[in-house]
Length: 254
Length: 248
Image (cartoon, rainbow over all chains, first blue to last red; front, side, top):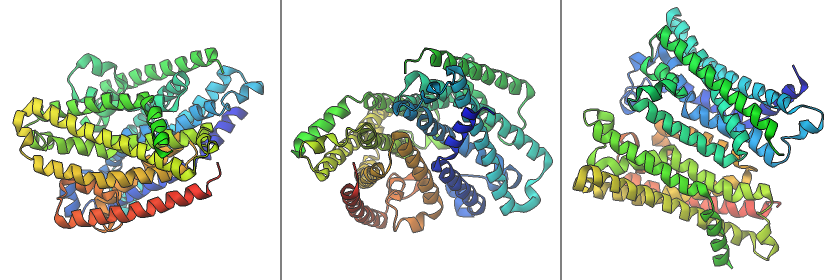
């Protein structure tokens, strides 16, 4: 591993907010697992506990991270990691120590993408842990476990693509508020695209596939054809975002 | 002096493009909500809010995350952003006290909060009138009371964001902290609302807007106003204390 990549990983790991966020997520998952099955809660939150509990609980809880909350959390962390560094004139420091522009951005991207995947993994571990504490071995029905693990892997891929997109935005806008604003607009458009019936737009929209996998096929297997199309579209977006970040970094005037 | 400071803050706010973009985004959300409500009459989730309850729905979607995070963002820009760029200390060099500076900033953030809130109220009633005609006024008494009551937790929220911004060093950190606080509060309001209602002012953002079918009873109104006033006083004390000890 390159020293620069190691440095960036340490830099991300030093963010106390990450630990606070996941401690809160654990608390949320714990309360959902233990308190949601009370009749009052079932009625108030309009949830069928027979459906969301036990083996389906980790999949049910996935929606609380992969989506608005996870993406907002990523954008705040990445703007701290890129835009704030740029503003403090720390962004180009590695260049003064002999690192190349592409090497620097590759290290940043690899550290950020790894971070996004670890976060999804952590979410899965937390949700399985709380589900195990509540229902014991009842949660381990293999077909459900395999289905849920596949969905978490797909979510990891989606979050990695979104991370690449946010990095590209940070590098293009070089401004915290503009990046946050564009991400909020993305989230709103994402909901709109999922809600309306415009087939062409839905086919090319990166978030549409995750919404299908999370909501339309909730507690069901995703059809292989749709799975492959989704992975292909996401990979294309990821490559495009990475390529755009590289190009912009070559031209950027520090 | 304080009037001049407030004018400077407003001039800075007027230059923030995000403020105008926020109005565009909120208009988009309200129109989209209206179309979904009008088209989903058979669907209990959306159809329930068609007609007289539409402004209540828009208030809930404003308060839930978008509006509150936006207020956090404005506080971050005016306080954390200026602290980071070294502009926060500038007025102090011209003989302004920290107290005056923070009062001006708090007043300007509160004005933004009020304008945004009134905008949501007016846009939701306007959109509702366009979609359902005079039916939008069927439950005007309910939603106007809710709007009036929501001014209390909104004011306390502004004070809370000012205090938080004084402790945070940059915009991203402030936004991250605001997101975590909002999510934790939302979670606890769902599960422990009965206990939180004695101490947590943010609980009343949900209670007063009728979130998850919560009823606005006389008891809720009295305890909500009391909790918000007491928390407001504590927050003002906290702001003054922080301003006094802060090294700029």
